Image (tube, rainbow, N blue to C red; front, side):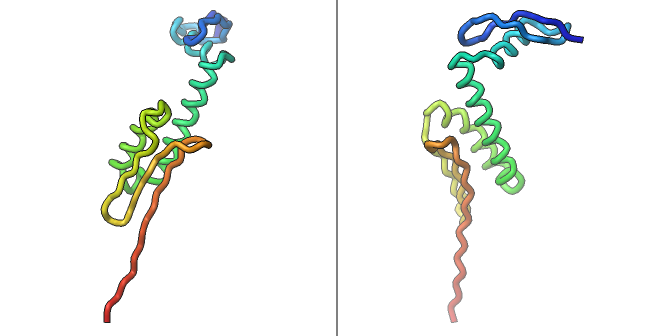
Length: 122
């Protein structure tokens, strides 16, 4: 069962009527109000969250199964890249594989590169 509550955007403070479960807390109502708010800060927070979730899915799909430790490092760097603390993180396994996560003009790019070299001497 649901009820209407008043939640406040955590960025601009504007009140908003939100539909919540009967036992929802004020904090939960504020989170929901922030999710629905149209202020620039709330929109930017949603964009960053969605971008981080997309990066997480890509890293889990491309890397986590074979290189879980590297996936963890890349996952932990998403927020730093979003906050402009650094531009790029590259990890070289030393075995011909490189992984990178970097900020581009279009968003955050995740790369996995494998170099193969076939050689023979007769």
